[in-house]
Amino acid sequence: MAELIVESYQNSTVNEILRDIGMKYKIDTSKDLLKADSPVQEIKFKYRTYSECVKMLYKKAEI
Image (cartoon, rainbow, N blue to C red; front, side, top):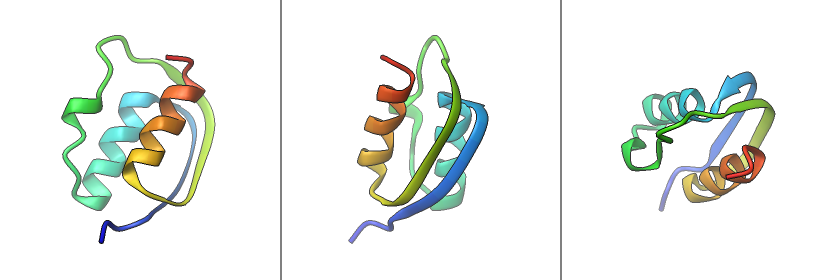
């Protein structure tokens, strides 16, 4: 079973957040990185799967 992600971020970008999650949870995030990075004011992941986090990030960045 995949490890659930519990993190919060402020004043970051989508790619910075994905890289941080990748390092902390040992997930290959390279396929989900954006070509044109997008800022994120604030986002919190409370016991979310990686795919849920990506969806939330993309929605927050209005992709």
